[in-house]
Length: 263
Image 1 (tube, rainbow, N blue to C red):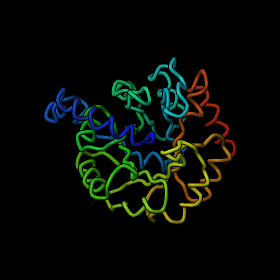
Image 2 (cartoon, rainbow, N blue to C red):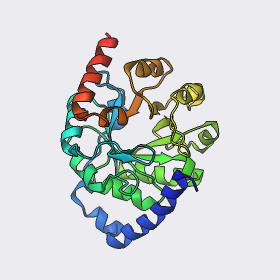
Image 3 (tube, one colour):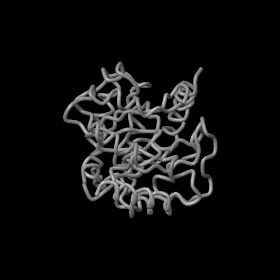
């Protein structure tokens, strides 16, 4: 059983336990459920912002502890203040050290929040809305096309945008018209190795008329400029900033370098 399979197996039991703790009806009563969402699409296309979806991530199965001392509110506030087009917040506790509380804390920032999670059940879409997310991630590798369609339509009904994450050409067959944003993950979820050329290989095959983002393995301004030249609108980055003692400061310096390179 590879890492991805282990995560999905555990997630099934975790979701069932969550359903018993708080029903879907109870989620609808939470204050954030009725608050209109920010549009990640609009922020990604805003020329005054960086196009970067900056991630708060404490650890990963491949790297272990990345940063377990930084404060989520402090970091995400700095990301937002320095031009992040969105915030990606890990809510998986067991494998990534995240939590719903991290997403709630990040909600203080006035930019879109992506719930970074292994979504396998419609209940998690309701959770995302109830706890302050503006967008959700659907991973093609762990879902059927029917599940992707159903979860996307439910997200749309709740006012959330959807990123469909793919890793290769075959997963593009699971794309549906309900998808807002298509993302190429440069990380092999079976081995957790990264290669940004995966985005380059798939660039011309991505559905036209959709916002395109590249995820994982991005570490310098050259990567961003290269992927922009291939038509990518957004860039999900986390470890590059989180491995530093002050992730917010690291992002600010990166954003400044990117802005200067684009003058």
